[in-house]
Length: 147
Image (cartoon, rainbow, N blue to C red; front, top):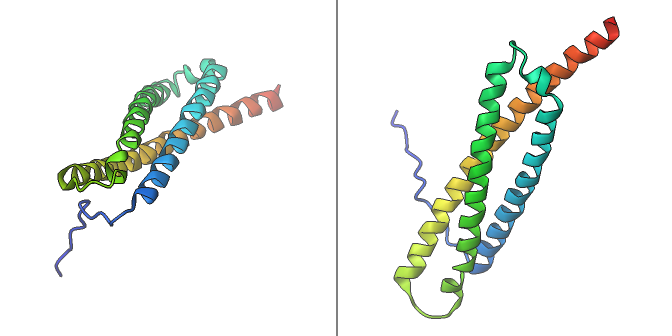
């Protein structure tokens, strides 16, 4: 049986309004994640002593480094999406600029893929942070009950 390859080149025809709405949604989610990263930073500071314990240190260090990379990626994506939103005028100006419009849509497709990958990576790191903190909290609770 022949396996079909799905191509990320597929891009449905989108109107300028739907592109604008999608960009607004991306910006909203990226800005929320930016705020959420501050929460994670505070959470990490709160549990610093437990995170540097020899049992969890290597995993904690890896997750914290990944979170720092994602924070940098978030800022870069926000800048790219804002720039992309400002360039939306190409589709709205009413001029037939086929090359520029095609380039804009290609850039939109690339951003779509980048944003989806970023969200996927972020959710993975978020789950790992909660898993580690949950484990630490269980251990702390057991210690308090035994004392």
